[in-house]
Length: 268
Image 1 (tube, one colour):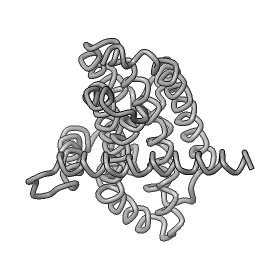
Image 2: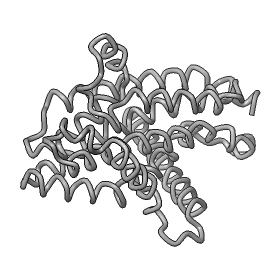
Image 3: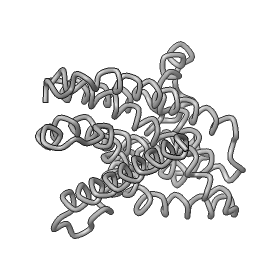
């Protein structure tokens, strides 16, 4: 009987959490795109423009690493930019999510973790409505296999849980260190420049590769490119590396968030 009641309460808590998450995501998207002409499709504009700039500057030089095809370079750069833009937007928004809702948390008892999760989830919705259909079409054209179009979601899931982990960590840290956004901009830039976004991984000197290899975004980008652009079946090892990287950071971020949570209310 007690086990049944326990399961009932757990189920009610999960339902309450999901309902609150839905409300926060909907609010986030409405506020972000109120009065906007393109709405969520603005999230595609930045990577498309940046892809055009990178192609104009580096396209001819780096095309030889992509079967001497400017088109392949364009698609590779776009894929990398979609990943890094998602990471930057999701984690930067999650960073301030707990502090910006401090007044609400002081009035109503709510699960604090829902705020960074809602920011990442809002960006997941943007991806599914904007970038994913584009990547899925490219994967179908390249591979002629529906499996590749669906498998894109595996490295993307790795990206999402990585962002959730980082979001937990930085949102908790921001409660204690209000200068964090300025430092975090530098961190994002370092991750961007050390990821094979606009350049092929093959040009990185062997002496530098070990340092770039610890970048958790690199296996995610490489796995997503392999599935989308190679025309081959998904590489299981690449997907596994991406998922492992994302899971490790998700666990570490969640652990730090829960460890710090008891001190939040005194500082909000």
